Image (cartoon, rainbow, N blue to C red; front, side, top):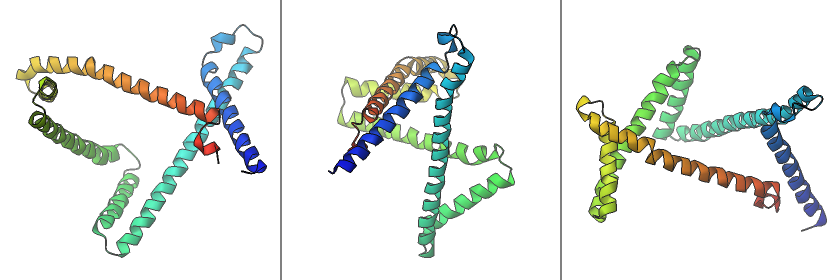
Length: 216
C-alpha cells in the first residue's frame, strides 16, 4: 500500500470520526438546553448544537430517498428486459407497479392506497405466519416430544386461541395477554438491546477507523 493510499484511508477515517462525534454531541446536547442554560448565549449555543444533527438527518433522508429511487429504477429496468422475453412474473410485477402508481395518483395520495394494498398484504402474511406456526408446532412434537416442545406448543395454542374474537375464550385471552405483555415484551426488549449494542459497537469501529471499509 502506497503512502498516498494510507493518507487517504486516514483522512476518510478522520472525517468519519469527526462527523460521528459532532452528530453524537448534537443529538445528546441539542435536545437538553437545561444543561447549559446558565451560560451566556445559551439560546444561540442551543441552535448551534441542534444544527449538525438536523443536517445529518436530512442528508440521510435524502440519500435514502435517492437510493430507493435508484433501486426501483434498476428493478423496473431488469424486469422490463424480462418482459420482452415473455417472463410471466415480471409482467405481473410491472402491471402491479403500474396499477399501484395509477391508484395513488387517481386517489391523490389519500389513505385508500394503504387500505387497498398494504392491509391485504399484511393480512396474507399474518395468515401465512399462522400456518407456519401451526406446522412448526406439529414438527416440534413429532421430533422432540419433551417438556420444552410441549411448552412451545402450549404457548402457541394459547396465543392463537387468545387472538380469536370469541367471548367464551375470555380466560384464554387473559393468559394470552399476560404472555404478550411480560415474556414476549421482555424478549423483544432483549432483542432491541442486542441490536442497540451491535449498532454502538459498529459505530465505534467506524469512528475509530477499524471498519473494513477504511482499510482499502
